[in-house]
Length: 327
Image (cartoon, rainbow, N blue to C red; front, top):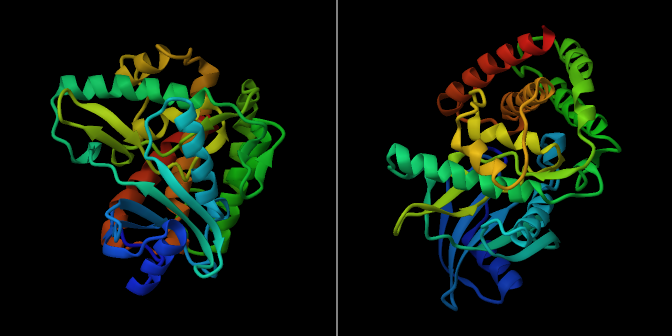
């Protein structure tokens, strides 16, 4: 989707950046349009290598508070995921504060698989893949850290409740900053509601790595034989928090069902119990995701005809979640 946050760059600047990063100029370049925030390019280099280049937004462009320096968290998440045995693209180079670009970039190997949302699969294959995905997410969530939240931009806390309230508070501050952001209740009421429900977060006592953006478009499949997961991509929204939050994006706009193969695959690797307290935490994480989907249009300014269906679904889903938390 087109977005104002996607950096525009000339062919010469793109080639120069590739040379600084990898020592080779660009022979061919194609922009990949599927992402929502960062500009992503598929490059063929003069030395024959095929790579993917991801560019941060321009440094002078206003962004949501949690989006500052996202590529730094993504770089760290790629390393942690690989160490945990989770399939990811190979990160070739991470450049931070590039003196010419004036921002950050990542260079990764090209995946030759098919995005899950573009694959035609029968029900049995879908179920097998969800089981496999559950295991990968459990391994990713097994990685633990030292602080809750987003350490790359300072939205952190000594407890998960403190970090969550800082994260949601910053997002609501952004909603105020971008006047006209559609929300189902006044910002002050939303703050009070989330804070009042946040006691359930005290059940979380260790920071775990959470991808928090595992929708079908961010999962690449190998379809050469029996379908399998080739890689999980786009770790830029990752944070340190509650592993339970990982269930939100693979089931976006829906509830968690006990017979979902995703849960069975997850539980084959690490325990996961959906207690009443867990369901309350899940609603807090749903609220956070739906708020992101509503507030992020402030800086990104998506094309209305493309964004409207997503905005409407996020709004209706947020209303349901808030009603449950309020009740």
